Amino acid sequence: MTDSSKNVTDRRKSFRLDMEKELVDILWTDEKGQEQHKKIACIDFARGGLKLECDQNIPVDTSVTVVFQSANDSSQRLYSKVLRSIKQENGWFEIGLALDKGAQ
Image: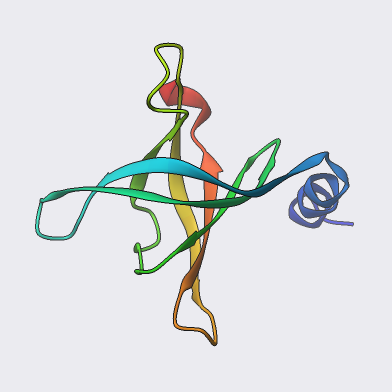
């Protein structure tokens, strides 16, 4: 087994938390340099990242800040990069984010 396939297997076996489409805030800078902010559904959360459902595409490698419970003073921010953005049959995008461990 190669190192990369072992990493995929390890990720698949890691704990995943079903977020039941909890709303989170995401912030990123688009291709035109404009800061974007959306409240979207978080599908699941795992050791290495998150899966989101968004009504627009966010390009791969875009830096995204995810804010849980933004109205709360003790809200938590996670820094990530888009790993994949897959258009679904319903026109929405499944966005896969990889957590950026260095930016915490």
